[in-house]
Image 1: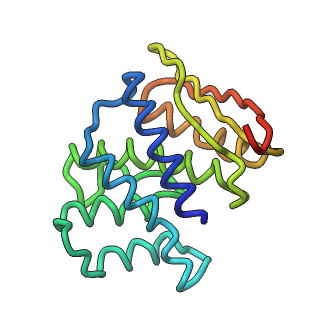
Image 2: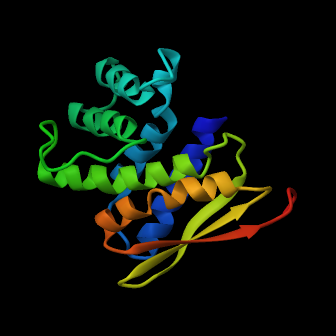
Image 3: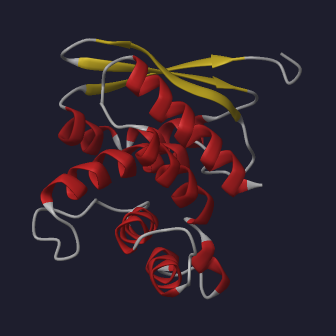
Amino acid sequence: MHAETIKRISLELFDSAKEEGIHNLGKDERELLGYAAYLHDIGDFISFADHQAHSYYIIRNAELLGFSQHEINIIANLAKFHRKKAPGKKSEELDDPSLTVLQQLSSFLKLAESLDRSHCSLIKHASFVYVDKDKALLEVIATGDCQLEVWGAETHAKGFKKVFHRELVLRVRSVGPLD
């Protein structure tokens, strides 16, 4: 299932980025990313065209028990911005610290979405394996031809650099289906 793949990859990116010092977000933000990854395409049930706006609306207006309104805002906005640029400083819904969190989390969600662009779960693992002040090396382990996924991830390199101030470099390692 695509949503489960996106959740798995998003959390792998989050965890490895934290381990490599790319961000200092905590378990609460990780949890919100996981829920947003799982719900990001819920708007497809209304229409594929502009489904991210439908996802935002559904999440914002559903009674999501156990979440504060602030947490719902973060999840809804992550779903809304999983396909396009994250909101800038003029976002009326979020304060500056929340906007920074949203920009960082949406970067991971966009990369994860791109890494399952074909919806074939070709990417088995994705993690940051090396980071310095100028670049972040993202290693992708794939089964099969994942050119579409790599191309998709590369389209988000500029946004990644804007958020994390590092060039995103991809390295693909192919493995057999049983490895």
